[in-house]
Image (cartoon, rainbow, N blue to C red; front, side, top):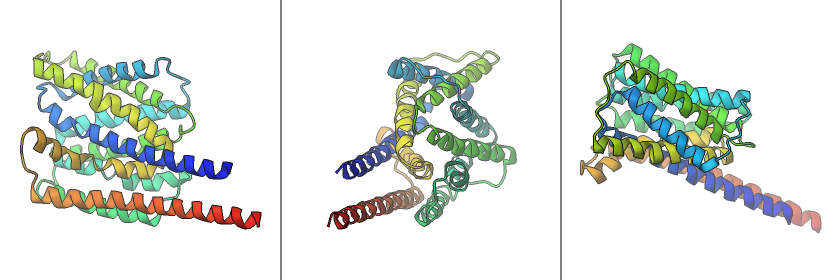
Length: 304
């Protein structure tokens, strides 16, 4: 009976993990909408939102377990590098290039998850990765540019770091990975606000202050809590694939807030991405359910 309870508990935690990463992607996706309200330098925005996010995390965990282990520090550095490199990339390449290249990271994670995590990348993962990339190409088909070499290199570097965030966070699945994000926000805040000292002072307006507060509290603060929970219960590649629905949510927020109707390419590409991500999760759920049924049959045969 205890085996059945354990199996049910694992399945329930996996479901909650999937929902947590979906929530994370949903909150991350609000950045494009909020950032339009903040006429500040990107480093100031990154530093400000990370400072607020770190306060949110501290209020939630109260007594952070900072053991400064290799994986805790590595995840923090990878997280800070992801945000800072992505900001720098946007200064040297188009936004479409930056977003598209950033989300090649599921493919990167698929390769490095096996040697570092011993988590097998299955056929359904590779199929989902193919359709995710196809959907991304359709969304940004008329916006991608082959120019901006430096910016594209920076974005690919950001994607690599983003992949390591999933890997090193997953490495802490038996402890508390949230502390890594706390450290990452401290690093980003220090660098971002440090750079701000050498730039023109930001103009503090009510919409700008409200937007940066929302980004710190919800878009990146509460999202960090959901992400740290979700990554404890599902594999790095699964979490990474779910996270790619973030750019699909972006035009939905624009539609709700501004009333701008998404393009046909966005609807088609977004549909393909959502179908791919949903499909791979259904296959994983079916496999888990099959394993559970086989376990019950083995127990029943053993009792007979």
